Image 1 (cartoon, rainbow, N blue to C red):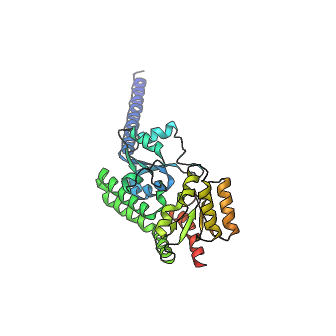
Image 2 (image 1 turned 45 degrees about the vertical axis):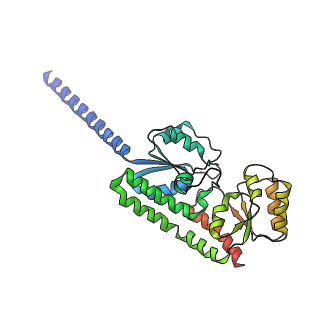
Image 3 (image 1 turned 90 degrees about the vertical axis):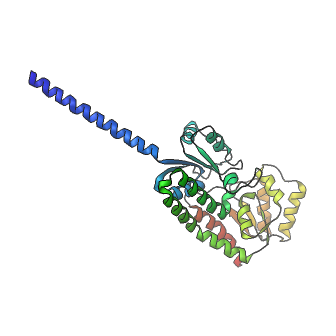
Length: 298
């Protein structure tokens, strides 16, 4: 009986030791995870640049990854709120475009909020919020992120800086095409159905006309008769080189303008406000810029 007791006691010691080892291992694993920086980005466009700059030294998640979800109308869930509260960095577009992320980040003592509009490119409230359509914005964001991560995690500073340069280098097909097109069509007049592509058009050297029409459509309002007539006349008399149409937004007013442009052989450049799920930033921008390239070549 005594031998049986000793055997049982020995087995219990082994079991307890195993459990203790598992607990220690689990705690070490959790500690390791907590030591890794975490970044949440409002959209997949900013998530992409954050992932490249952070590399393997941070966990990066984009909250909005589907093209049919509007960042301006998004309502965060409780799980998203918790995700933001636990993040080291929240990367927002700013300028009211994703104000829900601003609010969530500001309720957390841990989370550093970075707004591309206000903090990186120094825009002000009321400015066009579609910042990602200027390639320079993406370059500046990569550099800013690298500097921020380097301060939070100095041990991997060289990696962050190298990764930022890697991202900037990846933009070269876009920046090269922008520079090429800028030389071919300086100061030509163009129009938009919404101000989504404004920064890219400015980077290309185009002069945007009928901005009141685009702003009215973006705000969900009907353009005034005078504004509508002005755009119609510019189309009929070929005062614009092409019309940029945001295909993610439709209304009878916009549909009629697009129809009028087609009837008068005014080229139409189709763009989207949010990134296609299956495309990188470079692929997305090149698909839009090449439409302009085709127009310029004619």
